Length: 403
Image (cartoon, rainbow, N blue to C red; front, side, top):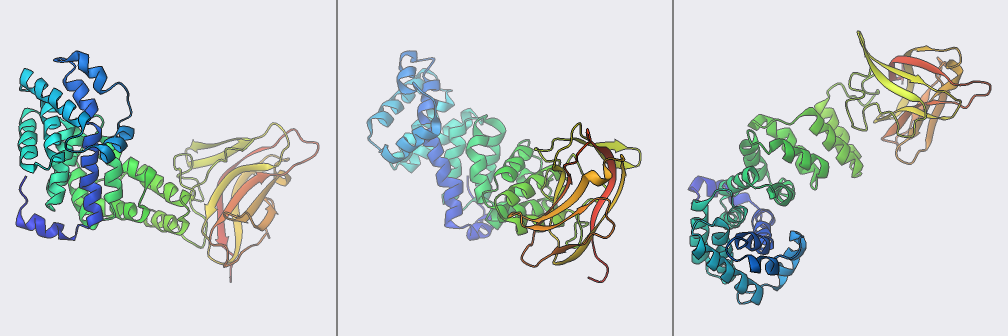
């Protein structure tokens, strides 16, 4: 548990807030799990006491009580620690009892006693979560970021409950460059890597930092799958950070340009979930699907009745200017007059233009006050028709020549 001078020097930039996130939070989690741990420890040697100690579930709620009310001489802690001593005497190989005793020494201010108890527990088992939580706090106080992350890794590899406790802490700590660098190098081969990056992408408590981590990780040996990157784009966009989401999306897709729509031939459609990909709206009343064919992907739709509503949608980030829509399709006789393009400003829905799909002269103007837009392909309400059908091989917004 000793840090090298080099490790300490590199960790010097670790902010106080990050230390609290990585260390003290972990110690609080150790306190939170004390009662549950003791109930398990003494269930064999003192079964009549187990229910008294842990008659309910809900570790984090209990943490609020323990974290604010427990003292070195408080009744519950002293009594529970006595049970742990009895359990350890009955079975000297009980690692959970050792960690419980270590926690009592910790809250009494006896760091030497805590260290001795936890070191003994670590020798008994490398799978004891409380031992790793205490070691995380101990190392973070000393600025030893490598040891901190080593115990995160061991806890996440061996303890079933560790991800739900530690992933939120790690995700918040990504705002520190030192943590991002060390974590990427350590987690590359880790079995919990995929679960963590999915969590970070879905929650993104620090979106800019998560994006930085995802961008830096591959250079440090940690893979970030395309679907995880797409999830982070969607999460960031959903948090209202649309410009940041668009920049990150473009960094992953060089063919995404601000003067035209993305993926005109639906190569990602149906398998990607970002707002900048083609999406079939949930409210679509048509039978709409993407079919994989020999020469690419085709959008197919079929309606059994006449209605007005969207059947395809994409959010765009067009620069101010005038645009046209180019499409390649095969439509039934009724479909040509029954389909229209609708461009609106996102998210307020201000109309920017509407035109029949059959029109070859339609022009859409995007003002500077509208950085994001929604392009929809939708059906028009028609009389004397039972429905329309057809296919599209290509849909693309392009800048108007000379604009």
